[in-house]
Length: 527
Image 1 (cartoon, helix red, strand yellow):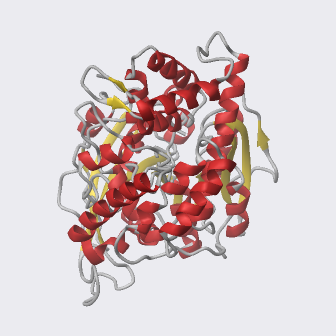
Image 2 (cartoon, rainbow, N blue to C red; image 1 turned 30 degrees about the vertical axis):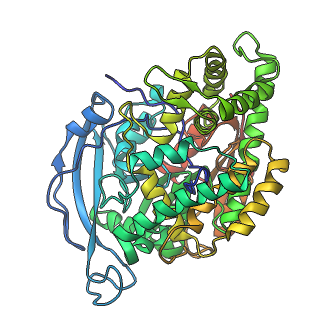
């Protein structure tokens, strides 16, 4: 079946026991259930030029077809597991060992006046950049990159360490993922909370038993150093990069580590690196609550398209309350618990077209049909129709917890759960409860830097005023932290902006191609 990419990228929530600093999917979301075709071949040793091979089959399996006029090539490179010790290190976790990083290069047959490579990351963390590079070649009508970019750059996608094809972290069973996502998103009673903690503890123990001291090596700073190895492997003197959502954190980290090697960075759906785990979770609770309010106002004003009008909040809240007592069962026996409904809501808020889908899903659920709820939730969780998951959330958890130096204790989480429940009625308590995942995660941490990118050229930081997952307030914060950031604002809804409108597209294209920085304070209208 041909899969058409939609336009949502994911910054994964810190909820239901799986922390998520930023999905793909996180922009353009990759459809769920895309098979992960392996990138075959021997990985190039550190510092050596890789050998690229033709791999159109990746496009066939990821999307179901190939983009016209695009050549796909794949390779692998080896990187040190621990860049602090380098490949010759002899002590410590990862010493002398390597990870393999999978790359895909998409090159237009209409390419002219080639500038170099455009490295892309879709966010997550845990999203596949290899898949993303394929989707971005399908043209603007599918939410892909404009021809002006495809004609000037090779599009290079990579799966970061621990993700998909790049030495993947795989330690959470499908049954445990079902349990996590289906769990009551607000475990209010002490007994429910204790069971929730026990589930997360079991997950942490399993991953710790499998990976041990290696777990901190999946953090963001290590991955940003891998990006410099990729830059060298594709033959570019300086990096040109497009990062969405969590990908903005990767790009910001790269700019701090290698400011002199930056040509142009577009950071769309900005993450403020200075927020700790609690601050970041509350920011998301605020962002999703605001986006849900926008959905309810749209619903009241568009009753013909919103079957749960006029009070969409009451309808959604009622559906969750009923599911806690008596969840609707689908034909295959799967129950639409409060957790699955919650994730359907989260999934729908990543793009404005999702609003109508959510209203229809809740309406059909009230009629006894949970299929649309499951479709929305499964798209977010990357669960296929057989109940199998990708490793997106295994990697998401490993990366986020490796990045976090300070993890709140259970007493503090219970306090936040109560405070945020009143402050952010639908999303506050689940975001607070989700902090448990890193609290129960084993291994140490490897926090990324949070300073200025001294010596780097201007970096374009793009924000969307209605973004639920990376709320707009983080956009100027990231630009200010870097010291060389220039803010571009889209007054729209959903998660990430480029290439959503002509105004945004023209500004970003001019920056990537000609290094023309938008004027200070530039804002683009929603339409």
